[in-house]
Image 1 (cartoon, rainbow, N blue to C red):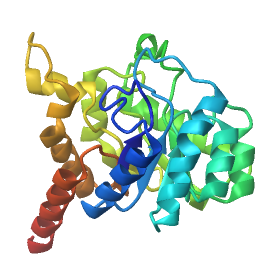
Image 2: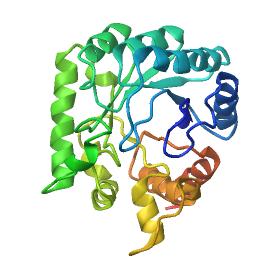
Image 3: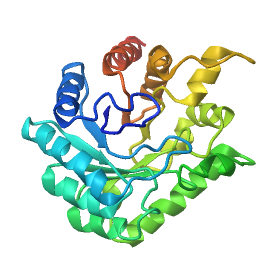
Length: 265
């Protein structure tokens, strides 16, 4: 899953693809590098980010979804708003990726159920402005699994077919680096929930902490692509359905090598 952020303020590449033409071209370039689907988002969810209004999110997202879908690209829409999800699916999006798992907008589950698109349910404990304060766990793996299972049950109760649910542990969302690493180390416990697993680790803070080492400043987000590819290979080996990345070629190569090693075992 290649990332196209149509935003001025995303943590990794905010502003680079803010223009519709540039965003569509970038999505096509990611497909050429090996992406199977493109995730288009118009609202930053980095820690501390403020929300944009619905009309601005629509203005950013819908033309890019239309442009990519018209080129035959499989598109997912990264949104917490039911209206944006509904219009994006009408414009050609094949999947709805909601980092709140339907919690941010009470209409989301109804809209997804009616539209029939697969739905990514991510582990989420609150909006970006306050999520760092919610990174408190006794056993992060057990708690994330339990909270995701509860969220899946709520989504199914709202009318979404179980077979259309994808789960995401929400790396970096209300989690510190130690929590993210523990979740990556125990992807098998998340897969035990019985749904396809999306891992979205690309360029995130925990990778910066790992690369920097104790007490040093983390490298900039765009210098974390090799580390991202390592997580992608580990995730593929653990049976993930997809990995969400900003730089596709390194991850595609890493996954290809992981698969070749498995095939030779």
